[in-house]
Image (cartoon, rainbow, N blue to C red; front, side, top):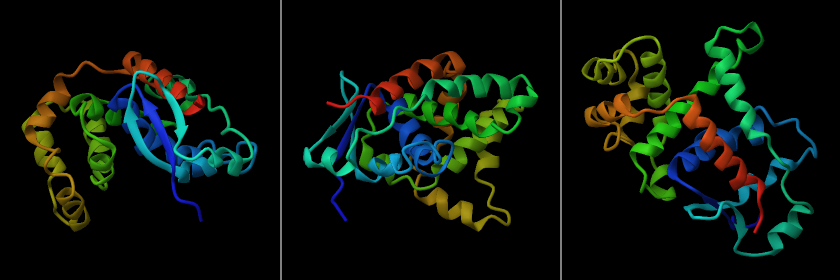
Length: 206
């Protein structure tokens, strides 16, 4: 097995979070799993680092990586996600099964609040995604009280597994973070812009 040696260059940390916590999985075994060519997803396993850069794309520390693929990774239509989110929120029957797409907003907002976090730290946060998704859903259901939201997120009643997860990310999942999360203006319009940047990052080679 080869050593990972691809570097994804992204415009900001929201794009980093969107890739690491959602799109990498959607590419390898989610929405895009059955795309052609059948092994289009292999490059995901070769990602070594994600860095902020003024130019978006994927580079390789060893050019033999591209020869190993035999082709450049498939082009992914990442921008279509905003359609899913809008349809789901409007109660469209066509998009009733796409509630998972709203997670993207939670992940992107985390990146906006922690704009300087590096990739290694991001990967060390374990299952913080569980808390971010729950936080976004509670807010969308009308709960905008920071104190109550934090209490619900850290309620370990019959949920020891959540307490274990929290230990890996408690430095960042704080009452102060939730306050910032509530006041940050970020929704489908802003997500669309970051998805465009993500599309550029994973569909360009340099």
